[in-house]
Length: 319
Image (cartoon, rainbow, N blue to C red; front, side, top):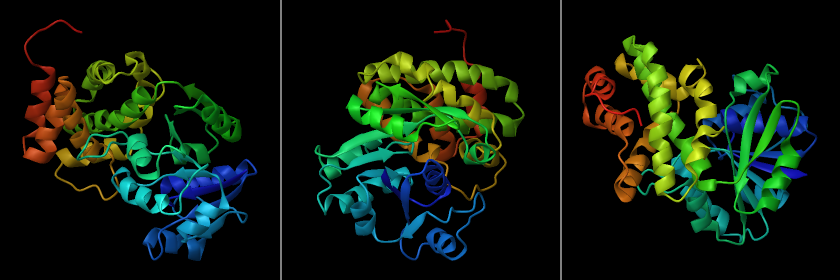
């Protein structure tokens, strides 16, 4: 197929590499004059990989849209609405947009598929591609399993058939709410795991995993999704890559935060915290882990105190 990938960061560049590996004619788009795009254009490489010779590069959004009917988007979650407005201008009827990104719109708590749908309209197909896996591991040939889901099963099947390989095995995700909320919120749990590591409380990560998945499953159920989806690849299945891996941006952010150090790369879980707080209030579902992290990051509460209060609060039934 002809494929355009919007976003040339860590995941976007990997997806370009991966699509070329599968034999797809692929164009990778980046913002004109952005440092990331200019570096790729001049060196055709970044800290993770060397771009294949067959991979086309462009900073023209129109060219990227004209090039393909399958459009993969991999950008920071908080930039999606602005990009969606630009995508809507040329009327993307008949295009399929695949969101290979995780997060919530911070001010509204809206899922990313909702954000994009509001901007490009219902005539375009929208799917999500989520689940465990790190670029660094994939590039070493280490395989993993991921999930693709949309509201149209034929769109899901087309994507799965087009991207399956010996490196990535895909599963059909039939619960869009559960998969999106699960994928976004696992980054929040990753921040908590990093804080525990930084404080020397790594043994509490087992309790964090048990409580985190249960907490988010209640939110998904209240939103109309299937609470069991949280125990699949989009959330619990992604814990190993997010709560334990040295490559996890969110875990690293949490670890550095409690040490008073700044993390220079994107940790999507920070803005997702804000979105989850909106959803917690809207659906009247208590999210104690979210509240503790929010108090720490946005309200200045001592992280050691917040986390110990979270795990050592008065005795209660487990679930």
